[in-house]
Structures are given as C-alpha cells and as structure tokens.
Amino acid sequence: MKKLLLILTGLCLSAMVNNAFAKDVPFAIAIHGGAGTIEKNRFTPEKEKAYRAKLKEAVEAGYTVLDQGGNSLDAVTTAIKILENSPFFNAGKGAVYTYNETHEMDASIMYGKNRQAGAVAGVKHIENPINLARLVMEESVHVMLSGEGAEEFAKTQGVELVDNKIFDTEHRYKSLQRAKFKMEKAKQQNKDYQAAHNALEVEYKVGTVGAVALDKNGNISSGTSTGGMTSKRFGRIGDSPVIGAGTFADNRSCAVSATGHGEYFIRYNVAADICARVQYQGKSIEQAGKEVIHDVLMPVGGTGGVIIIDTKGNISLPFNTKGMYRASKSSNQATYVGIFKDD
Ligand code: ASP
Image (tube, rainbow, N blue to C red; front, side, top):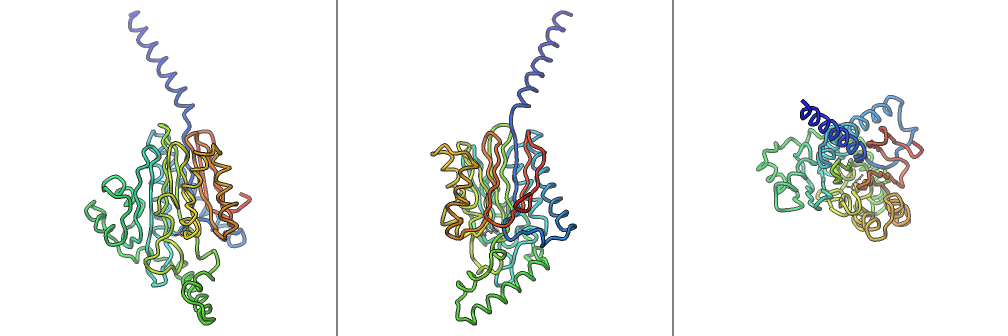
C-alpha cells in the first residue's frame, strides 16, 4: 500500500512539474494576407468583418496545431492553406491574373531547425501550392521546382492537378482589366511593357499570404504563397518562392515571411537580411525588421511588409504600406487581428 502511495505521489509530482514546464514553453504564430493600399474607406463594415474573421480563423487553426504539440511546419501549412482557399487573398483561389489572363503561383516553406527548404514557382494547376512546396522539401532532393517540372513532381506525389480556372474570381479579373487599361495608356505614351508595368500603382503589385510559427520544441518555420503581381508577364517569378528573399527560417535567428513588391525583396534579400541582423548584430527582431522595411526598402521604393518570429516567441509585424492583413496568437498573448496602420 505504502509503495502504491509513493508511486502515485511520484506520478502526481512529475505531472505537476511537466505541466508547469509546459506552461513556460512559449509557442506562437503570426500570419499575413498581404500588404498594400489597404485603407479603411475601401471597406464596407461587412467586408472588414469578413476579412478579420478569415484571418482569425487561419491564425487560430495554426495555433491549435501548436497547442496540441504539433510542429511549426504543420502550423504554418495549416494556416496558409486556409488563406489559399479563401478568395480574399492573392494566393490559391483568389490569385491575381497574369497579363495573359491565367494564374501562375509561387510558394515556399522553410524549417528553422535544419534549414531545410522547399519551393515551387509558376505552378498553374496546384490547388494548394504550399503543400507542394512542402513535398519538394520533404520528398525531393531539390529545393525549388518550377512550372511543368513541379507539376510532374506533384503527380508522382499523388497531388491532383486542377483546372487553372478554379482560381478565377471576378474581383481579380476586374483588377486585371483596370491594370491593362492603365498599361495601354502608358504604352500610348511610348512606354514599353516594363515601363508600363512600373507605372502601375502599388495596389497591383502586392498581396500574398504567409505564416511564421514557433512550436513547443523550440523550432521555428516560415511559409509564403502567392499569385504574384497583377498583370505580371507570364513566367515572372517573384520573391515568395525565393529562400532568403520572401521566406527564411533559422532557429539561430528568426523566421520571416514577406509580402510586397517582389523584385525589391529579391534584390535586397529581405528575409535573410533581417535574420542576419538578428544573428550577427544581436538585434531584436523588432529592430532588424524595422531597419530593413523602413530604412533599406522605403528609400529605394520597395513597398511591403514582413512577419517575424523568434525562438522566444517574440513577434514583429512591420510594413511600410498603408495596411497589411495580419494576425497573431501566442501562449502568452490573445488573438490579435490587424488590417490598417493604426489597428
Ligand atoms: N511578393 C509577391 C510577389 O512579388 C507579391 C506580394 O507579396 O504581394 O510576387
């Protein structure tokens, strides 16, 4: 009897210790649904409510994965899939149109524990590009696959190819027509495709989804998925699938997912630069993110934002546009959802 009591006390004590320990282990997630000309006066109350609800749904789904002990890669893919499946955001269903009126999508994912990464670029028939990026990471010997090759690989993994039309939405089509009209006008002033595209305002150039997460084992991950830029030239690949530009994760520094004018994010190696400042200069993610988004990108005209997480569960969400769809939740912070600058 005494022995049994001792065993029971021991078990209780160890459960208590485990519980206390579990409480102290931070875990967290942040997501974005794109940055850009996002101003309050462009929203009806219903529209704003619907966007906020979708962001909340995605961040909380990712958080639940972490809360149940799941790893950060699963949390990131879970949240991104919800955003890809929503027509509100420029990724998966709701992806913008190329100049040729099709959808070409890019996505990537990275694991901070071992710097494994996977990416797909220019895929047209993959319902959830983030899943394929993850398969590239886990089931292929490569980091990035593009176009037809990526889709052939998808077939070998049992991923069904879908009609490009499933990504169609009326609002993106209208946006393409407006962009084309503006580009035609610019061409009449003797501007070539490049100059005409450059003349488009920021609202045609940004909007993407992404997530960063820290799990209970202390591993961080990041992922990004996008339809790219409205009216982009077919074959154009942005920063989102480029490891170091649109996505980066390393347990020694931070995990970042970006949204913005991809050409700048590639040239300024944005995600990796933020993490390098954290790792080599000992800066906080807040400081490093602020420097790159405001002091590096802003002066050269690079618009957009990033979401950043570190292994302590700190989160930072800087952007230099009018707004950024964003949300976060951590073991010590309730759900936060923001759209506008002053949210
Ligand atoms: N960065 C994406 C791209 O250039 C677009 C975006 O984030 O809005 O493809």
